[in-house]
Length: 233
Image (cartoon, rainbow, N blue to C red; front, top):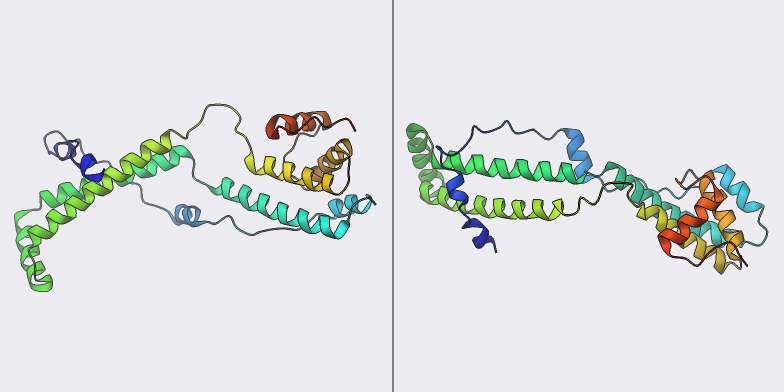
């Protein structure tokens, strides 16, 4: 596949007569690097005092078991939410990949068009230090750059397809949290309506972004997770 990409006439795009002036490449800032390598931050399983108080008022719950399970689910949700908040958007991904492509273009072009004196000194120094032809090394380097360019161009197109449609995006981490906690409450013996009401109040005290109106919350659970209607028995 890489060889196929490399033969798509990319070399012609490097011809000086056809090429536009190179754009200044944006440098990565320390903040960019931190976002790129962030793993989501702290795995926070803590409950608020209001949430603790709310749970203690429900005598039908096995408090220790449910608190432990709730902490694990909250930790996963907060971890995922922190990752999403710090993640690069699709447009940022595409921009950064485009910059890498431009960098490979520029480096390959400069290797093809070294000033004569620089090429002569580089050839001699490379022969003395590495024991091989500088021209052969540059040729191999250009081949590797073509492969890199092909890969990142292909990845950029793949990521572009994941941009999604306009409008509100589904909060999968929150929906998974809601669905899993509803199941836990029902396993504790709660009826559907009671479980939904408790969970709605609980999530609001924990600052999880759910609809403030209980009826809207019930609709969200049915629409997003395809649960059977909550409101009867």
